[in-house]
Length: 297
Image (cartoon, rainbow, N blue to C red; front, side, top):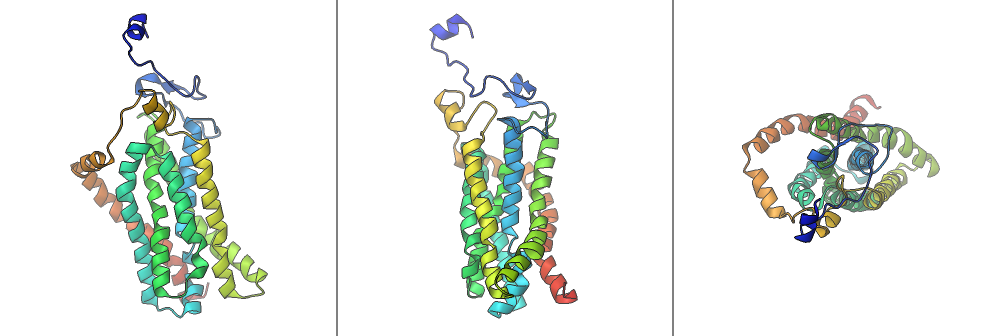
């Protein structure tokens, strides 16, 4: 910056970090030009790993109840239709959250919404054992479903940290690894933790499914707190810091939502995503119950 700019009061460039551990492009807001998978350095690679791990844990708790549904169905005397209704309601929760989390990311960055959703969704997850009937199960899964909205922050965060030349790879890795949470939870909850808790409670399956969800809930809450405290919104720092130093203008969440909603490309991607993601949700919710009913697995 020239002395003339200083004398005229022009805002000086501010950034939280004076050096980066990856090669960056100053013309793209200091976004990373490379992906170092084995690095955990702030801000770029820390955000990368927080992005996919937060998404992974969110999907883990979202579908943690799925492998337990056969036990819940018997214990509470629920019908197959009531179980399916709860699964549909669980998806409805994430639909609502995704409408508001996109504009929230534009305004606050991905870090705060990611942390907030993980901490919020961990509460109903921990309360799984309090369910006493079909209505309670549906309401519980509605709130747990908010965890599915972390996909928005996962993709936004990677896009905020990496240049356009590698952002596709970054998004694919974050989204792909994060999605694994929906499958891993089937194994961990159904084949490891539930049998362990059942053994601990001397074979009492009712107590086992009522207490086992506390484990992923604690992990999710801890992950949310850690992400909030030890990661960054953007390469140059957090949004509140950038706004304070005049490096970023205030964004209207409402205006951001309207701009996205009236873009025809948004709706093309909406249709494509609906076609593929619906299959994933159906399998994650139904697979364990189906194999239990049909093959006693």
